[in-house]
Amino acid sequence: MDKIYDVIIIGSGPAGLAAALYAGRAELDTIIIEKAPMSGGQIINTYEVDNYPGIPGISGFELGTKFREHCDRMDMKFITGEVINFRVEDGLKIITLDNDTVYKSKTAIIATGANPRKLGVKGEERLAGMGVSYCATCDGAFFRNKVTAVIGGGDVAVEDAIFLARLCKKVYVIHRRDEFRAARSYINKLVSMENVEIIWDSVVDEIAGKEQVENITVKNLKTANSTELPVDGVFIAVGNIPNSSVYKTAIEADPSGYLIAGESCETNIPGVFAAGDVRTKELRQIITAASDGANSITGVEKYLNTL
Ligand code: NAP
Image (cartoon, rainbow, N blue to C red; front, side, top):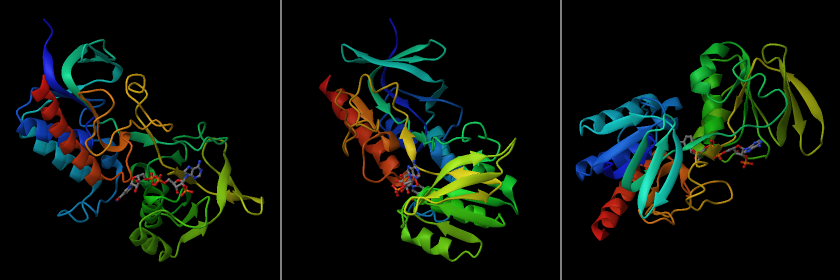
């Protein structure tokens, strides 16, 4: 007979790793499925995390590594693979990987996070990796002393712009409204930087260049005027799309694709939990993702007790 685990955790960002830690402490028979070895989720691309209590100013990579090392002390079993199918049969959660391996479990925690949203403008796809980037901390070093533009007005856009302004000759921040939604502390830092120019009420209509990004067309939404701006790099930070496509057929999701679950992380399917950025929630941060990991294991234990 196939092995049936107590819980399968899908994803190894802060939510998945916190769930793994709690599962290990609860001595649940657990596996964690991650897309790439030590994938770590979005956190590994975060330059600096300064709002995780007790560890001020740590790099995202270092914090992610600490989360993982903590799990490794519990001897948790990690499996690398991409989940291509998720279904529930007679209460059993059945997960198929891209190498056709099938895993079965009494419960599942979906902690698959989210990926950067694309702008969807001309030139974006063609010049991706040739000046168009979705990760300033990964690619910023290639733009030392150059001119870059950051698109967006959230925490990531403002953080990225601060990071780039330390390296680049000039950084434009292009935002579709006239106020940022980022945290005040980031905004204060950004506006104090002399080589940053903020372009309000504007969107990028086109990214152009022969083999590398050479310029962008910026349209002011209030005046409808368009301007061509010479830049060497474009950093797109316009939010995320949840990694829920495999699960949405089985689990209820909202119109944006976030799996519907409250603080307990319970979805509409008994024994299936959604944790971290993939779940419907107000605040998507490392600390709330980690909290979801803990809450979902509490739910798993309660559910197992009913079997
Ligand atoms: P976000 O908060 O959703 O911000 C996305 C930004 O992109 C918004 O300013 C939005 O404009 C803009 N935008 C969306 N679609 C656009 C489009 N098609 N064209 C132009 N602009 C567009 O996303 P995020 O900055 O990636 O952050 C994701 C989550 O992670 C947030 O909850 C954030 O607080 C959290 N985070 C936290 C930290 C931290 O605490 N250290 C660091 C990074 C991220 P509008 O403002 O007009 O909607």
